[in-house]
Amino acid sequence: MSKQPSKILYAQDFPRIAACGPHVGGGFNSRVQGVEFYSATRGSHQFERGEGWYAADEMIATGQIYFVHPFPHKNCRSSGFVYGGTWACNECRTDGFQKPWWNVRVMKDGSAWCVVGEGFEDLQISDNYAFGDTRESALEAYASIMNAKTA
Image 1: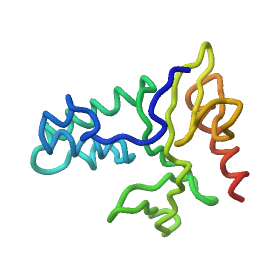
Image 2: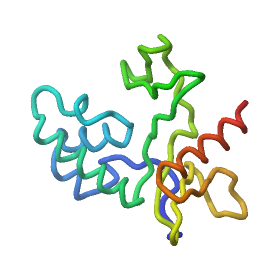
Image 3: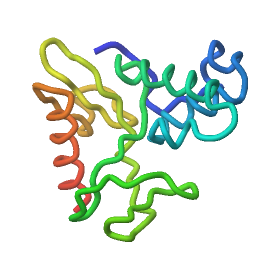
Image 4: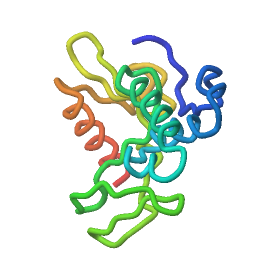
């Protein structure tokens, strides 16, 4: 795996994105924070915010940056949504359930997928990683490991 910054980076950390203006940056940051496209691009400047959202989405899809992946919480099947600066869920009527380990980077490692949590250094030192045959199975394995650690 290539050496990447081991924390979430925002629009201002990428000169190419920051130069596009605040609306593009806002869309970028929304995607990094796990906000769905529809919510991130409603209202005025939706085109610019969409450009930023897609720029971050491409970097996430290629494993270049960390992002907030909303994992299901408690016994609820829903992953919730961002509301008022925190995560909320209409299904179980709770909020504020985001965990620090939701900050992940997902990438291909050979023929497998790998998920690493924020602060990951390497496989010998760190314990915040998981592998899977698919992107989804790697995310599920990571959630199982991290839920067991924090239980």
